[in-house]
Each structure stands twice: as C-alpha cells, then as structure tokens.
Length: 262
Image 1 (cartoon, rainbow, N blue to C red):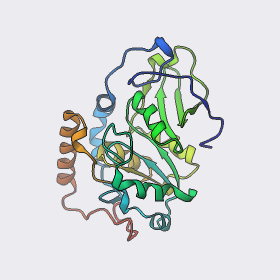
Image 2: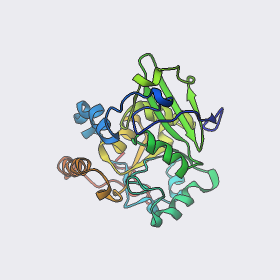
Image 3: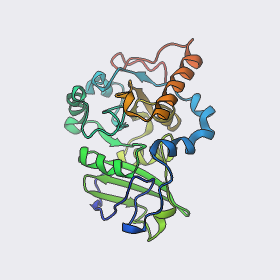
Image 4: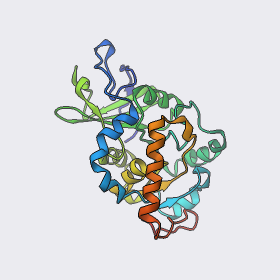
C-alpha cells in the first residue's frame, strides 16, 4: 500500500500547483491559499453545512492513542500548517512534538499527510516528515494523477505523468473528496476508521465530513504566520460557525468517546 513501488523522485518545481520537469514549468496560477479559495468558492453553502467537527480539542496533545483506538480510529490524515506548526516552519511546534511522536509510535495507527500547500512546501514537508506519506492529487486534462511521496521517493498512479501532462494539471485541494478517497485507499481503511486532524473548518473539517471520515478540530497555531487575507477568512469562518451552531451542543470529547457531533 503506502510504501509499495516507491521510486526516487526526478521531479522538481517552484511553488506552483503542480510539479514540473526542469525548465518546462508552466507559470504559477496563484499561491496555495489563493488556489484553494478559487477552487471552492462556489461550494461555500455546502461546506458551511459540514463545518462542524466530530471532536474539538485545543491541540494534538489532547489526543491519546488509547482513546482513539477505543473510538475505532485506526488511521489519521494530518493537516500540517496551523495544526502541527506555524505556517512555513521547518519543525513541529516544540510543545507538540512529544504528542506527535506518541501518536506515530508503534504503528497501531496509520498516518498520512494531506496539505493544501504549494509545491515547494510539499517537498519541504517530505523532508520534515520523512516517514509519513504525503499525498497529492492533480486533475490533468484526461485523468486524475495521484502522487505519494515518502522522504525522497515517490510513486504516481495510475503511472508516471507523460511529458507535458503536468503543465496543464491542477492540484486538487481540501475539501476535494478525491483527496480523501486517495488517503483512504493508501491507508487501507474504511472512512469510519479514519479521522482528519486540522485547524480549518471549511477545508479540513468539511473535507472529512463530506467524505465520511471523522474530524478533529484543533486551534490554529501561529495565526499571524498566515497571509492577511487568510486570517480574514479564518475570522469569517469562525463567525459563521458561531451563528450557524450557536444553539447546538459542543462537539464531543475524544477522551470521553462522545460522537454526538458526528
């Protein structure tokens, strides 16, 4: 599954939506957050209806492997920026490293990373998390291309892109359901046994809920590290959440095992 048929990568690129082959790169079509907004703005009404997390915790240090296993969680799909570290940092936030190590240890829970970052950041994350598979999906003119990167090696399915194919490809971003289908296939688990952990309601949480996964909302780390436009959208997202869900119960506790907000 996730470590099968991985090959050293020969692809390089700038911070664009798709990886490129040497100098044949097409021009970038916006940064990571701008591409996400453009891709999903028409779906905002749907996303608003699915922005409530199964569980909410301050940070990943509140997640205990034994509690997750009791709840039937066998896999975690991670967001990174804002969840494990400040946007653009090169290491996990110091106060969260031991919690992440505890969750990664032992192999009882399977892990994957799905980030809405650009290409340069995607490659950087493969160095920061060399033992956790990073997943990305591209929509090419004739097919979907799925990319798994583990350290310096990567695998493409249904096969290595043809010459020039990536120049017109568009990276899909959360809350695209294709990303979660790819994650579930690589983890080898059904949706009900996987939780997505992230800090954004309209991308991370809505993505999980729409795909049938369970979702864990954490507080955003280093909000000031995000572009001004993203911070404005984050505030608008939280305001919309308070209006839409102010009369409903809070999401359940992971430790208590409540699934009232599923």
